Length: 160
Image 1 (tube, helix red, strand yellow):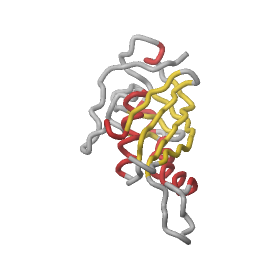
Image 2 (tube, one colour):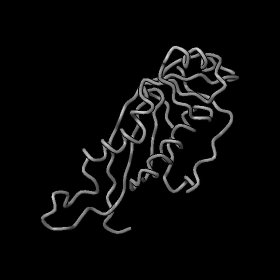
Image 3 (cartoon, rainbow, N blue to C red):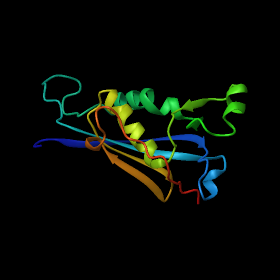
Image 4 (spheres, rainbow, N blue to C red):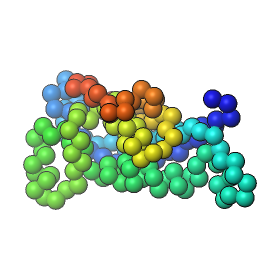
């Protein structure tokens, strides 16, 4: 659409997960420092004299909303599908666990994050989630149905 601008803010968070039944190393409990790129798209505000004039969104406001909707929940957490052998121990010891109920591949995580940001009302264009410095998954907002994503049951991660 004419006069729209894309803006991006990058976040990082650390999480652990385990892909039970995976053929490779990711079947072991392990962690990642995820890099999250959130791209919003819209028309900059044109209300004269308003402090946000010329902005699609103030980056400070974007930071607050993304942290509340996603990053604070996932940071330093075990990302659980619910079938992980270590899950009961983590819960019993008071560790931070995010019960997501889907296989925590980078593909599924990027869809989950995009959906959460759409629910938060952000003018989301895309989410790119880096699992390692050389491997990422990206999802466009328009590819996430209003009722939420269909999560994949199988998949891998790039632990290398």
